Image 1 (cartoon, rainbow, N blue to C red):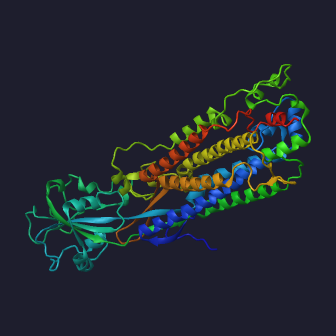
Image 2 (tube, helix red, strand yellow):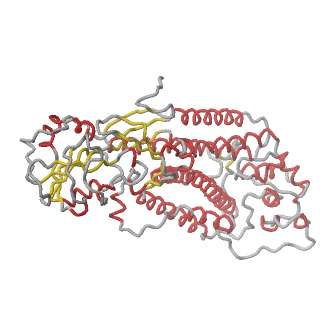
Image 3 (cartoon, rainbow, N blue to C red):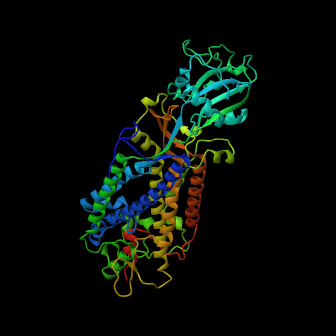
Length: 556
């Protein structure tokens, strides 16, 4: 692999493709989709390993129960850290911390840059004959003002595109012009002869790169050359705003957008993934005996060797265990089974639902009261001048690539946290439903290492019919958010088509992509809220993942 500085750029990124903006944009969107697929797979693998590291053994459970404490089984829980060995806690923390750079930087490994071009603006009378131009006293001014010599300029004019006044304004009233060059304004208002060809201004000039690049449309300054020794026509005219432009002649130029690859970011991602792989390998080398990865593992163990600390409390629910040590005391009176059935949401708790709704609310866009059709014109994950958030007025003083990339990917961290929360909620509800079904249906236990009629499992507590759609939705949501908020780089070409050192690094946003992301997130939240309203099939005491409640129910 080779990596080198190219086209005046620093070593933070390298150009993979240079050309049409549509092609570079499509490649960026496609690669971001691939990146988010790989990121989701790594996220799911990390979540699996973190849950395994949190899973207690029979020895851990007995130690906790002896102190009248309970542990979680079948779900990720930092509550278990107090009773698990330090090695597993360290591995869990490393897996978590190594995820942060991935979510903050992965989508900025590959990104597109908008190439905008400097252009000159001329003013000509309607009767100016470009096929038979006059001789100019200062022909060198063409090179200085439009980067073409006089003969080349006049030979190119027949290829210029004629635009009516409104289309001319719509085309050039943009901060970033990608496919247009020299502009000639044609007017009948000039009381001049056929020799009237005048210099107006420059657009996308490096001197005006940090502000509006089309201020020449609104300026009231006189149209004249500032240097008396160099002028296309040193003739003083009225201000541009007082003239009536009949039409424009616009030069079409090749687009110069970039598809960029950041090696420093890629190295960080590779190192983080390597650390994760090492942690996963060490997680697999677990020498503990009787590890409770699933509720079935716990039930099988407690049926074989009942736990004496919960003897006589067979109807002990998680809700009562959570009240403290006194709830473990065996009552002298028989316990009564409450007749009301619980809902799936009771396996999670209202706090989880409140937090996940709060997560979705943080993804709301800054309000723009414009029509959806206008939002679509801004593009789906495309760079548009009206949807770029600048953080400084002077591009040379702007923050670097890494800092802006971190800022642009903060929503990815929020979304990944929401995934862990969503996954944990869904796991808890399905785990509780599976446990509840044992009250009315005889079926083999689902355990990690099957014996006899027991069922082995390739997942922990989230069946494939739930986990696969969740991973697909999470991948799409991450991709949509990557198209909603993204790293933006705008590079400037001079009128001759040479890449300058001027560039703008900022954050871009796509309102239409953000709307779709919010819609998908809303559907996912409504889905889990709807599942939470579902009733359990029996009124069996709710144990969920509580080791004490599961142990209590397993006494003969």
